[in-house]
Length: 278
Image 1 (cartoon, rainbow, N blue to C red):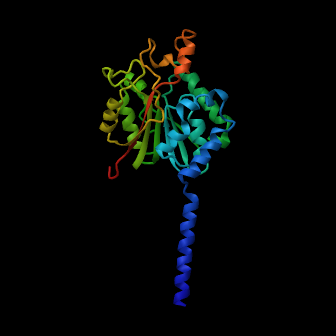
Image 2: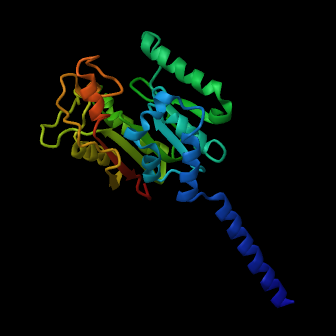
């Protein structure tokens, strides 16, 4: 009888372990999920055209994203990455969109937030678990429940915060939202390291070493870098800054073919963690 009970215990433990494996995604299964989502009908042809420059699958896998995670996207704008991340975590995880703070006095901000809300409402099957919060000057609310997020991501936003003297507060909010051991994934236009550091990032380009020091000053620890979003064709010396390049084309039709051939900006891609025990 003792032998039978021990055998049953082993079988139950093995079954539990298998069940746990079945509910925990691997890198390969997440990659397959991302392939499916990237091919989904929620994405426009214009959005797909940005994939060769933004490498969403490779970038998100570098950050360690998984479908069962709680993810916070900072300032998602029109939702280019929301269309990818929110469907990935729809069934097993949670998605917080920390948008800009509403400003009734700004028609542009009001219209952008309304368009994002309309996007979410149009596809409850994909975006039904999205919670919209706010991040910016004047907002004191949390971007997600403190210590709840497995992953916080921000794409090409640091230059905006530097221009508004808001970067330390932004990273403090991200730190607060993350679990100990949680990941902060950062992508930003990379300035020429030989150029003087512009703490306001008026050109849209941010010095990578400067950004790392600033983020680590908020308590994070850099654990990895990736060159997946690098672009050596980007000379970073344009009259109208990074917005000269696609998809903005700030110069209009002037030298448009030249800038199209360069592509989107050279970008650094960084992975930080919130250390445990903090």
